[in-house]
Image 1 (cartoon, one colour):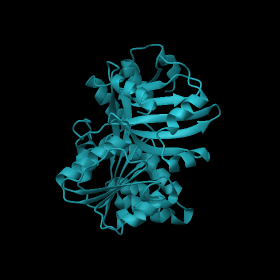
Image 2 (cartoon, rainbow, N blue to C red; image 1 turned 90 degrees about the vertical axis):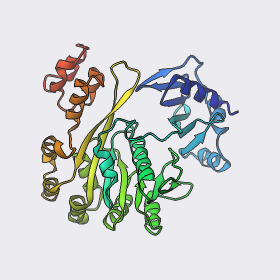
Image 3 (cartoon, rainbow, N blue to C red; image 1 turned 120 degrees about the horizontal axis):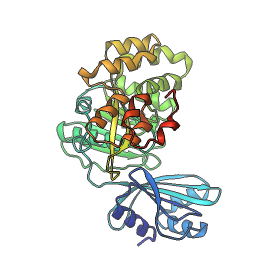
Image 4 (cartoon, rainbow, N blue to C red; image 1 turned 180 degrees about the horizontal axis):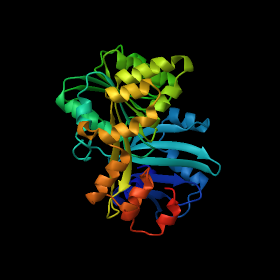
Length: 363
């Protein structure tokens, strides 16, 4: 058994989401959002490099020794599945192992708004799930793919970096392809997928102009495209896509977003009141005629007002969702304040008065 499995087994027993290994400090566990060390000695460079290289293939070992980072999936001997990032830093090797449950979560189990299920029923267009790193975007998309897999007879092509949740084909056929193993870039994967009679294409990350452009083409030509962006709100998502493409394509990009962008879901993970878990809280944009007009007329700054008044069709601002969750006692008030845009609305919920001065009088 690879020696690193002992740390992973300990992390799973504690219920952590991530195991961090870094030179000069003991192994650390991400527990409900907080990073906590385990009782172990500080890891040395030689020791840690020995641990991590035990689980690499010859090709991965050669790539890592050439100075490149690695992203891959790893299944420990006891069956735990992890998404792994390995890197080098000033003091030596580092690695982060993100636990991927074997059972694909459902939208109901994640307690996400019912409108997300409606987004799965689109036959074409683009649906984006956005948020910072570690906010559960991949988990939400996996739940959406699982819903499609169980409810419709489709050809679903999922392009991932790396493959995380494994989807056995059920009512649908699910084809999962991994960056670096089965395809060179996401853009190449989308280009190839469009020749493979797809109904749904999942793009693990819209990380560059070429990938965004190919995904837009797929969405315009009769496919449902699901994807992620590292943006923290609906407005920032739209602006990011417009800014990512060349200036001469600006009007064309705005036209695509106005017509083919179906929805944007932006999520954060907020601690539960007992501190023993985290709940996904989401901002939701559902594209309609009013939002399309704001995109075309460069008035995206007015979109939040539409989200606030569009609750009858499933839209909501993140602040609205946070307040709703607070009133239901589903999230910790002090943690909720961290994610709020207008923090003044949340002052009365704070249980730790020490955080209020830090927010500032204008927050």
